[in-house]
Amino acid sequence: AEIVQKVRNSQKPFFRPSIDIGVHSEELAVLMERCWAQEPAERPDFSQIKIFIRRFNKEGSTSILDNLLSRMEQYANNLEKLVEERTQAYLEEKRKAENLLYQILPHSVAEQLKRGETVRAEAFDSVTIYFSDIVGFTALSAESTPMQVVTLLNDLYTCFD
Image (cartoon, rainbow, N blue to C red; front, top):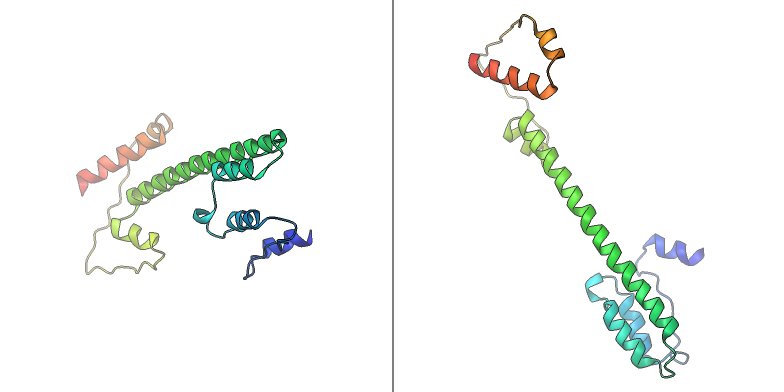
């Protein structure tokens, strides 16, 4: 539990186990340190690790080790696929949200909101306020989908504009 807590804290320098070169070969120590690299691009991939361990294991009893490496490789590939799928889903939802934002707000206002800026109110010297009553609107909207109602109102007010 103490080790897990040290890793979770992410304090610099990052927690890494100590390696006793007397117990392990220098090559194995280098491989372990490469696997612990903070940047994922600096870490060896599973095929490189598998080749090294097969070469390193002199007895030839690699069945358990091969099984472990194979499972780890499958797990890593599955995680990569899952991350890619989730990223694509996130980007699609972000695109939909931005499209909705652009539909309901002026483009300049939407851009300011996306950048996290405060939108300043605009003042106009003169404006027109239009009040209207659409006869039978309640019955019409009850029989229509929300998108049909929005389209109807948009078309109607575009004519008056």
